Image 1 (cartoon, helix red, strand yellow):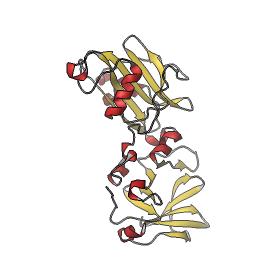
Image 2 (cartoon, rainbow, N blue to C red):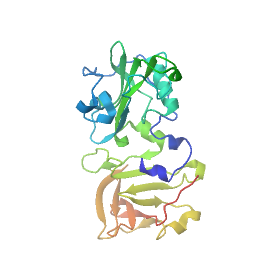
Image 3 (cartoon, one colour):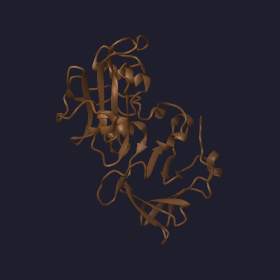
Image 4 (cartoon, rainbow, N blue to C red):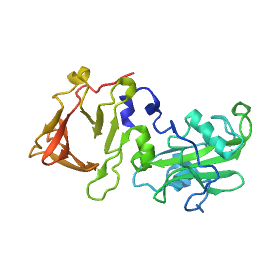
Length: 274
């Protein structure tokens, strides 16, 4: 996620590594079983880098994925069960996604498919394999062979809320807007920035209520109440009943209603903290 260049420490920096998650729902089945292949050659995969897991997810916007293609695994530690392999992957940061709520959608003698569903639609998939591995990896055992996920905005709200990610929606359809278009997050507590809200729209960074020591990083001050300019550009994005506009020159963001908006200034010198 692009905002990680500004937030440099803490659990939030484990975004998409399952920080603080409770683990898979071991033994529980997904609402819909998966009947497709659990192994797909890279040259036949929809997303070659994500292996068979990339065929399982159903995304409005693709997020990312990964796979292990070596016949003898050597990239991390093996485990003695499928669920333990997920825990190892979490500890080693091998899966860029959620762990809480994963359920079994398919399995055979050597592989188990875990999925994360939102309203019955698979938004993340992880396939673990029981296969050969080097002595350095712990010898033969279970490990993550492939994984895939949709854009983070399509993930469960319990997950995005845990990351501090604020998901915007299309004002007409109510569908989540992908983070490739708009990304918003709460300021990190370890910087004492929790009173701030960051908003990134197409490379421009806007901030709600900058703390006093950062005011020099903005072209104009934050205003909790302001009139909406007549030439403001409607993004079509909403969050919790508040609409988002941008100034014609993209120098400010306006959040609220047509009658009363907050002016979020654009950062001229994007802040960072360690």
